[in-house]
Image: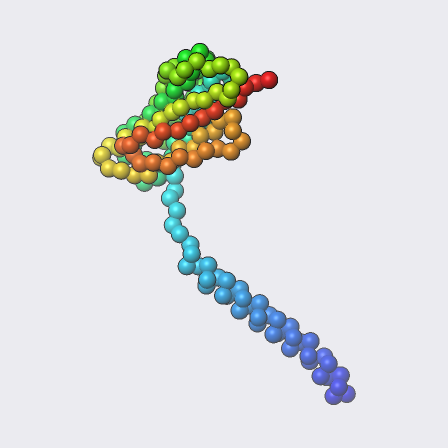
Length: 165
């Protein structure tokens, strides 16, 4: 009889030990990773969209939420080849004052290589102070390209269109 009691008590003790070990690992994981958390910036986004030879290019302008009202203007200038069709499709004015301009000042496109679009973002602050600016370019490439800069400094970028077969 005593033998049966020991056999049934051993699995219960094993479960307690397993629960204790798992709990200790969980607590250690939490404590070790709690200190690695970092504050992140909450962004306010606005995106002008242009069309070049029938292909859409989006330039998402992001400023910290706390700086949204400090944006005097955000201007995106798209430089395109002189022989392509290009027009502004959409400009979002809901977050801050924004403009999109197209300048046909790049060399003629040969129609065979990828269509290169050069651009610059100019974000001007009302108080003259600097703050972070982020630009996310969505074009013919599969993955958006992200650029980082500061207000009151030009931020250069490149976008691409694809040759249609």
